[in-house]
Structures are given as structure tokens and as C-alpha cells.
Amino acid sequence: MNIDRFKKDHAAIFTAIKELKSLVSSGISENADAIAKAIISISSAIKLHLAAEDQFLYPALAKSANSAAVQLGKKFQDEMGGIAAAYVEFAGRWNIASKVTANPEGFRADANNIFQALHQRIQRESKELYPLVEQI
Image 1 (cartoon, helix red, strand yellow):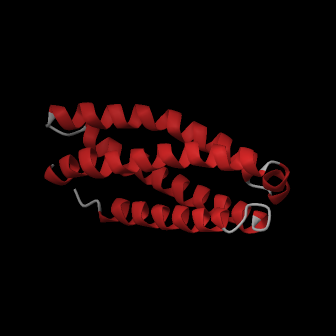
Image 2 (cartoon, helix red, strand yellow; image 1 turned 90 degrees about the vertical axis):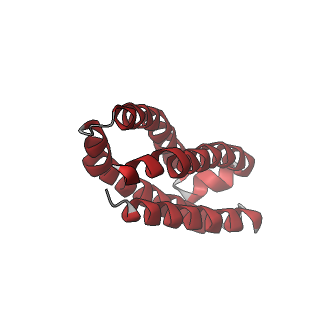
């Protein structure tokens, strides 16, 4: 299975997160508008990526003759539900500049938590899931 699109999505999400971190480093309150817009943009990228995984990747894994691929796909899909829900909550809290400005340190802590979880997840997909997918 060709997963180049998924890898490109990961790279784009990492780039967007890096740009968001740069905005945060330059001053949360001063960049609240750009931060809120970045969160909306990242949210769109994540939603599209997750939809593609749900439509193509996980069904292909579920139909695989490789039982390890079936099990790993199910595990990753189940885990992603919790991470996706946490991200949606995060985005809902911080997608408006006035919310970011009202609580910059709350935003920073929340962003650190959610983006660390996303980073770890993407790393796991790249190291554990995608190599297996490329073999089937």
C-alpha cells in the first residue's frame, strides 16, 4: 500500500506545529490572532488526515491477511479516538484570539500537552504502523 500521502500529511502537520511554536515563542498575547488562525489551520489538516486514515488506511489493514497488521491497525485506530477528541477540545478552547489572550499561560500548558501527544502519536505511526503497512 502506498502511504506517501500520509507521510506528507505528517510533515505538513509538523511544519504547522513548528510555526505555531515560533508564534508562541514570539509572544502569546502579541500573536493571539495568528495563533488562533494556526490552530484552525492545523485542525483542518488533522481532520483531513484522520478522514483519509479512516477511509483508506484502517480498512486496508482490517482486510489484510497479516494478522499483526490487523491487530496493530485496530489498536492504532482505537487509540486515535481519544487523541482526536482531546485535540478537538483543545482547538475549541483556543481557536479564538480573545481566548488565547485571556489566558496565555493556560494556552501554553494546554498546547504543550496536546502537541506532545500528537508528536508522540505521529512518531509511533512513522516507526511502528507505516513500515508494516508498506509491507502489505
